[in-house]
Image (tube, rainbow, N blue to C red; front, side, top):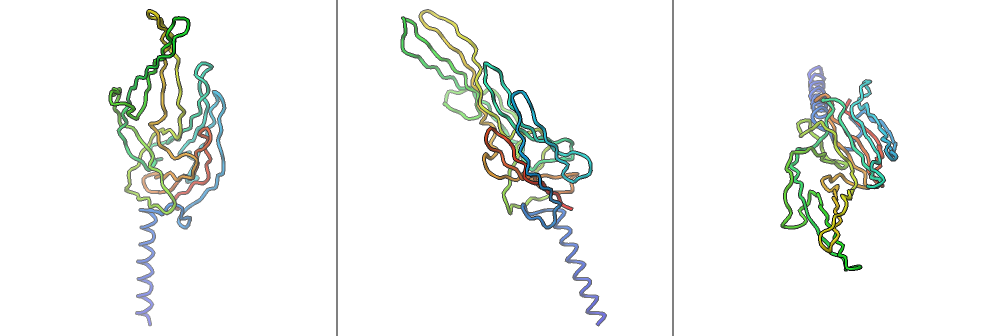
Length: 241
């Protein structure tokens, strides 16, 4: 009888160790069982030239780990442009992500309009984009940038996955800068610089999980959605116990 009891205790001990090890080294996204869950259900919305910030103390130790921001920037000439981002507040607050090579292209587009009063109006656009629009586009810059690898419900996050600390855009609007006009012979040239927000591919208008790692030992997630004008709805945060 004592032998049976001893075997039972040994098996229980091994099972418990395996569960603890699993909890520490990996987790299933959306599974609340091994987690400390905090419900936020908060939407941050900035205004024109006004940034709204929202801090996240994921493990509730009194030290903020991440910050989310939303603002609308611009000028009377450029218009108003929404932008949102998330940032690590210390080097032990990491996102599940990768280092990616971004290539910035310059695309030139010229449009000649019909002659009016013997004057030809010409629009000259310099388009700055991460997508090659034409075979003749020139490469302006190649650089290593950080990107979040978003997760879905039931994905598995591992302690040894790739993690990064950075300030990362969740959404950024396209914008145009008018550089003015100049005249040459019978033509008036109008020059524009167009900047496209296509270097960022964070999911839009859907619930998304951002995997996180704290202090190199704790795994968790930030559940959120980015939607209309890149406003951010923070739904919940989670961290292993």
